[in-house]
Image (cartoon, rainbow, N blue to C red; front, side, top):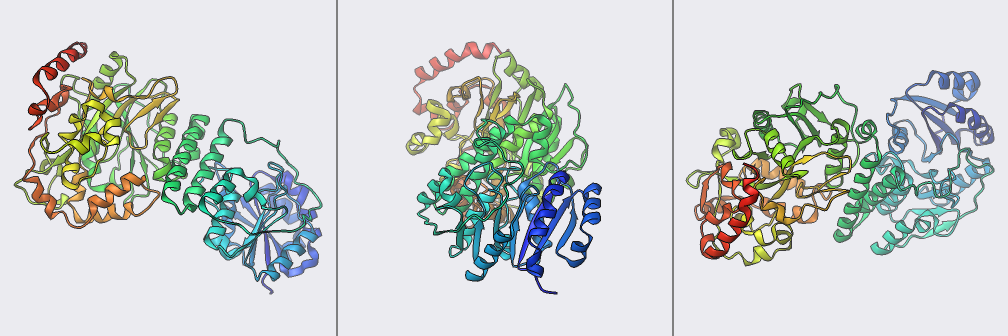
Amino acid sequence: MMKPILSYCIPVQNRLAEVEATLWQNLDANRQFGQAVEFVIADFGGDPALDRHIRMNFAPELASGYLRIVTVKRLHPWHFGRAKNVFRDHIAAELYSSLDADNFVSAAETQQILDLHAEHAGRLLIHHFSGNWGDGTCGRITLPADLYRSVGYDERSLPRQYDEMDLILSALRTEPGLAYVSYFPGGALRKSKATASFLRNEGVGIDCRVVADLRTAKPLNPKQKRYIEDGGLLEAMQRFNRSSSFARNARNSDGRERYFAQAMTGAHAAVRALDPVAALQCFFEALARPLSRLDDGLVPVFACVKDDTFVLEEWYRHYRRIGCGPFFIVDDDSATPVSETLPYPDVHALTPRVGHYRTCKAAWLMAAMKAVLPQGRWALTIDADEFVDVPSRLGRSMADAAAAAEGAGSPWAPGLLVDMLPAPSDQPGEPARGSFLDEFDRHLFDGSGDESAYRRNNSIRWAFGRHWRASYCIDARYRLAGTIDVLRKVPLVRYSHDIRLHHGFHDVAFCDAAKTGRERWHSPLLLPIRHYKLVKLFDARERERMAAHASLCFIHDFKTTANLRELVAGDRAGDWDKLHLLHTVPYDPDRFSDPEFFRDALGVAAAVPGLVRRTMHALLGGAQKSLR
């Protein structure tokens, strides 16, 4: 049997009426091409009515192979990229051509495709777009089947918008010599202002060949011309998918960071536009079991985890001890699934289906929070190597800390990362040798040295302002490797549907309130956070894993990636020696109850005049007494 040249691929889910209106006409119009052309229908969910209609009305076409129908798993919710990728394993033709159920295709169009295929030796991409957005033609595209399989539609995009444009852009970036064919000069790559701007900024010129539009019938279900500009979900999806595509196809790192930021904004907007059930279904795969009910006496925990297996059991026990639960953990493709590491009834592992850590960490958590939290419910947002403690002046549990913040009229409580260190006399060992909680039980408390570069750093000025010494005296990573990672955090928040989480939890915003501001970290509400990242850095296997993460642009932002690369470079023997030169103290959460805890650090007393220090302390006394 002759191998077909062209496969028209039709994804169908709940679209029987459209198939009934278009399929016979399409088959009849293209019979003359014999075995050179086939039509393939993917029936999502195995619709009995569709199957019966096809088999009753098109038996000869099925018998000859001119028409084929394959049953695939139902998509819930519907996702254009995932739907169109299912044909990868079901076609053998040289060309893949997308054809929605409401589209018609004429014999003249098919002949044009076959002629162009022969002329360009199969290396071409045809976009069958009329030039009118929303008329149902932008989704039609023809390209080599091998390129369709290797590039394909982006399955980590939001369910709709920009899917075909991303495939075109990605295919042309993958194979620059590919002929781009359109029905009007420049095609959709020029008509889309954002795409045209991206190509100009990247210095990419597209040689577009223009051919006649030989369509004889328009699609059945056109939309309004500016249907996407609704200021809601469709516009958010467009922004996220388009920016993600630009970030993936950009060659310039500065431009890539800009597109990542735009994608994050789009993802956040999509979460806000979706209802709670739809947010959960859109951003995550189907749940293994129903979500737990919330306990009024506990503070629920939301976290994103990737391969933090060695720390998770202790992490879970710690938060259970201080009155937290249930746990909603986004498992970002951990080698050992979180559901296996923490097989407890109050732990829910959520598998993301949209985006990547770099673009969607905060959006994932916002979607999970929206699905389970009522307005005004307090929750923790933390990473797996962070252990938040409650100083005794605030109470004994996380609920006590939330009550203190509520009483102070604040919708969040500030946190401070404290990098945990081993005693200087110890030698580096594998975390598996014993509990890292016992081995790493100290922290830097040293305000001496040349701090000028540190306090002038823009990130430090943004985070702490004139209170930078609170960060400097405990910033072990700066002393060991010279890297600056902001130590301020927002671990405890009062949920609202308009919440906007920061990617690194360094800030939080609400639509009806100003951002946090650096003065709020000089507060009696401060929650110390034991940070065990250095456990990983002194472990060879963990450093190797972190180095692999640092090489992927979709994992961290540019600054964090650079810091990670610096931290994991080489062995850490020299850094271990540096520990002997640093002044460390045993960790005590109550040390941080006083907003001016840093005044007792080595070298700070001489740097801060006593009168000024006492005045600042007196000014804060009233705020501290209000929490007693």
